[in-house]
Amino acid sequence: MGSTDNQPPSAPSAFEKRVKRRISARVHDFFAVCPPGLKTTCMNELAKLHPDIKEIQPLPGGVAFKAKLPMGCLANLSLGSPSKILMRIAAFKAENFSALEKNIKQIDWELFLPGNAALDIQATAHKSRLYHSGAIEERARAIIEPRLFTPGKKSEQNLLIRADNDQFELSLDMSGDLLFKRGVKQKVMTAPLRENLAFAILKTAGFTRQDVLIDPMCGSGTFSIEAAMIQANIPPGFFRSFAVEDWPGFREKNFNHLKKQLRENFTLGTGSKIFASDIDASVLSLLTDAIDQHDFLNTIQARETDFFDIQPAQLTREKGVVVLNPPYGKRLGSNMDMTHFFSEIGKKLVADFKGWRVGIIYPEKALGKVMNLPLRPMPFFHGGLDLFAGIGKIRG
Ligand SMILES: C[S@@+](CC[C@H](N)C(=O)[O-])C[C@H]1O[C@@H](n2cnc3c(N)ncnc32)[C@H](O)[C@@H]1O
Image (cartoon, rainbow, N blue to C red; front, side, top):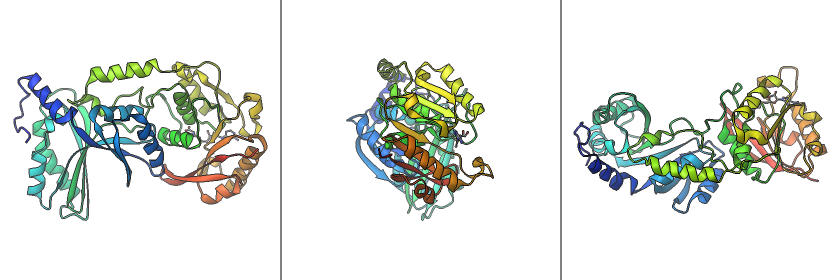
């Protein structure tokens, strides 16, 4: 039963002991929220991450797993495909507001959340007697806020309340900013590919640390930067922070130690393994700016080149992975026909990329056929559109 006292705990060590017993030492339910199409990549990542991560299970909207809090932190730091990671803090049935309030009062909010939390509460209700999400949020806020007591600079925290058939689930967002924000790029072009999608396409195309990459319509370089991080063994979340870092159960010392160990395993290369190019010099400068700022990006060679002029053999003797996010819709320009453009891309790949693995994004299923390549379509959703990533290998 949570304390209703809104004073800070007088004996920090007693408070810390409670946090340890109730939060840090317990196994919790986590949920990695994934965009459609990325669940398999996320399951594979979780399965490899740590043996203490158990009961990995695909569910609508993402992948559930059980672990202790430090493993949840490791997942935030190390997974490339999810959008965010939630920690479930309560599950109960409530058919009316008094049952809802009674259950919310029982949660040890002060053990989960920092005292200075600025709480964003988002409720959704489906097939439930309590269906007014605004009223659910209001009742929850009225109970939780008086329990958080520290004035001063606020820590942004998100609480998600989901009601389905009168069954409530309350989860805290451990990530804060969406996880595709890696903290590497300073500037991006309009509607760039999200990093978690680029990561999943690279992984599904079989890209490994040993492979070379050609990213011939690189724009601001999302694929190339993700590939450089994979090659250098840098966890996707290494350069950013997470909402969980403000929680009372977060152990800063242990987390910093973990990051130090991970840093010792970075393999910063020299010599080009990643060939990024674009026909548009202005977008390319976004990538070259990032390369100038981060040493680990020095494996990327960025050039202004037309894709149709590229001869892979002039760049590398190895055959690796080629990834393309061609322009489509408005970006293609009114005088270019999409069917013709994608058919030309297909012909170029067959002619000059024999033996290369390929990952190519296209906006309509029919365009997959137009390219006449042995591609397996991986459907996903991006920027309000249903898209496909065609994954395969060019014969030869
Ligand atoms: C959809 S954007 C790529 C966005 C990129 N994935 C990102 O995250 O920033 C498509 C890019 O293809 C480039 N492009 C179009 N035609 C090209 C061509 N023939 N050769 C090289 N690049 C081309 C455009 O300049 C544009 O930057």
